[in-house]
Image (cartoon, rainbow, N blue to C red; front, side, top):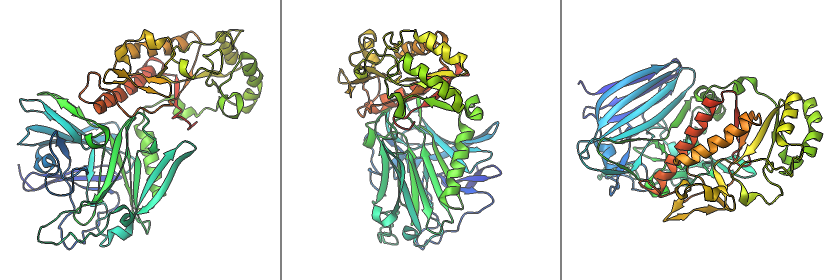
Length: 517
């Protein structure tokens, strides 16, 4: 095996290079849009700004030398991982590079998965760790993406680049705020060039979310841009639960590290027995030699490329929803009938009956979970009402919260106790609701039955999936840690949604995202 070597993953619009040095250490060398080229380093102290391709921490391990254990880089295993092999796979419009690394001390194998798309300047990254030792290990951190040198070519990088962070809350979504790097504690600390040979200061800036509401406080995104608009880095963490990204100084430049839950922020630990493995959540990174608008355009193109294909993406139907400034969660057959003709005249193709259709009165918050229509609200019959919508050319839609059960709901007693999030034997209660745990077969079966009944018996062709609580505690039932229990639930829920699309190909599902209608 001749070293050093460079492994290239390339499309017509993006080149990704992984560099293996003469010791076998691997680094993500560049992610460069084409046509284009990386700027040469102007650092007086370092020949390159590379960071290890993957950073890993096991239980009890902190930082090897540089940075601190509060940061996502500088790990013992990350510095010890050595190149073993690589493989390139091609599927339709994607190319994936798998780089296999090995730590001789812990005997773990790590595989970095790097995927590029044919028509967009975006790299998608995940990592897999496998326990090849003869004893259990506990993983406390595994990065999805680590890249150094984001500001290479700028001598005074701390003043030439600005970090934008998307604050996000009810009634104030996607508020991108610019921060100059020194205000975040990221600048020239004077540590470089000293006899101690520091590779970095202790400074870094992180943004994270803990819990089941993945966009509470911040969107799982970030953006680093040159002040002259000549270059933009734009990233997103693709997880419906906990996540973290951070930037900081490393070898006289700025690095980015990002991924899903970690021990320090999210009480996440994953126990792996010999032969077991774990894969991180994806992180997407966009790089453009232009301003942030070009980066947003590329990321939007990527999102449209990587999502599951559905006729709804092409038809772009007009949807009427009866909630906002209309029925406000108080539907009846009389009110719905009065709205149908005006809705038809607007050209709408879907008529969505929002909250309240399942309850006899307005005090339903603590009772949700059975998802059967109210006979009091719809004396003409709910099935007949939805059939009438169809005769008018409208596809019926319903609002539903598939991840919660009200504390007064009969379903709270019907399902097994372990079908709900809990800590130390106690069900977690949040705003009068219990959080369903989609790892449990009974939960999936119950919700599959609910959707099947509404689709097949009532003719529902559209669902608005809402979620109005935020569970930060995770769950400690049959898992390595509360954070790992939550992540497994997040993934099981997405698998359930995938199964719905498989079973009902024409069904349209909207993520309400609690206020983003």
